[in-house]
Length: 138
Image (tube, rainbow, N blue to C red; front, top):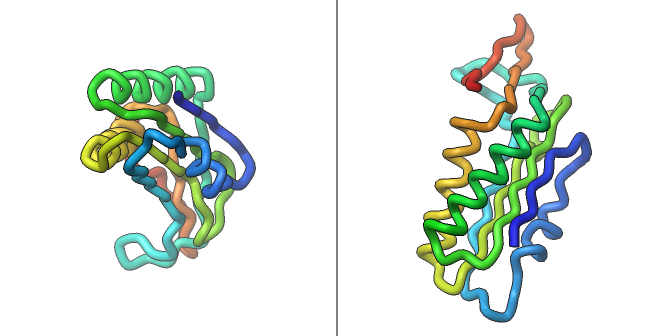
């Protein structure tokens, strides 16, 4: 099972975890990305995420498909939030379940690394003295 979403609303972490739970699952690995209050010594006021949604959903599904082939996982959830987020809010949750923990750990790490490299979601950090696009990719 895979559950891929892009939303302008808060991500329900517990719901993401519940979606990957099953009787035949022995391990669940969860990555929760949060907006931190500082980058390179500068105070972050807020972040804004923009997306090319059709392509992002397609690429996130592709990441999930690679995971389902490469590791013996049961389920994967990838939810990403867009819009303006304050310090402490959650822009991304990835939850992966598998019979054994190694597959869940490895697949979850792959998912966040691939997402940051290939999915057309762009992050802009806002500081007291201006703003900067971060790690712009595709």
